[in-house]
Amino acid sequence: MNKIYRHFFLPEKRKLKSGGPLGMGWMGFMAPELVQLAYALFTAIVIFFTWTNLEAPQQLMWQRLTYVSGIIALWVVYKLWPCRFVLMLRFLYLLYTLAYWYPDTYEINHQFGCLDHLFVNYEQDMFGMQPALRFSEIFSSPVVSELMYFGYLSYYLFFVATIFYVFFKHYDQVERVAYIIMAGFFICYVIFLFLPVVGPQYYYLAAGVEEIAHGTFPDVGNYFREHTEAITMPGWNGGIFYHLCELAHQTGERPTAAFPSSHVAIATLVMVMLLRMRLWKNLLVLAIPYVFLCLSTVYIMAHYAIDAIAGLFFGIILFFILGGMKLSKLK
Image: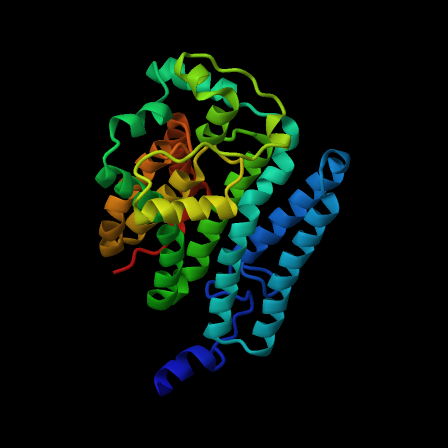
């Protein structure tokens, strides 16, 4: 107990001027915090210029001020008490706020109209059908259904577990790992702001499942300015993972953020990071959930197949443009 107290609660022996182990930040802020601050400022500017088209711009601005204040408050606490415990709280806070920033993209992008009819046409041309419509129909057994929903929910393991594994096992790399993951998220969110694709769970309901099945893909325009209803999730509705996924969707899902699939992109980014760092055991543990996650995005109608494919390539691209090759090879 004494050792744990000294390790986590006593001030760091070396002062972290950047606020993080690698010195990547600025003015005492860590690099992943700066990413979130930059995104908050960028979206505030977007809100300012689209003010009259938004339902509650004042609330959106207030929420940004609130979350930025949280980052600053923890920065002040760390200045007063520079220990690993407070640093861990700073990482936890960044992860916690992702639950807000994702559905927040809907509040901005729904003013631009829905582009799903274009993506559904691309999907039809590529596959000759709608994979999101057929996948769960072909593989409807309870076992397959639960595996798909397990895979979809395992998404949170990829970035949360990875950041804290590195925090506890390879502390000197955690700032870079968290920066790459957080920057990956917010790059995806910037795309979502200006590319309003809602995904099959929303578009199929708005356009009509029968219409989709018969190859008719109408332009629903600004339908999602006032509608956020989703189609009933497919598969076996008696499973625990089904119900957990249903709860997660009811809590934080919105008609937004379908292309590219951030689930696939971030999971792929993490897998490439683990490969680069030679964390073989972690890679092995996540290998099967990764496969299920990629498939599940289409199975549960959260994404079109082209969203998942784009997410796969985009995750690899993110790794390189965000400096993933600078990660140390760990034993």
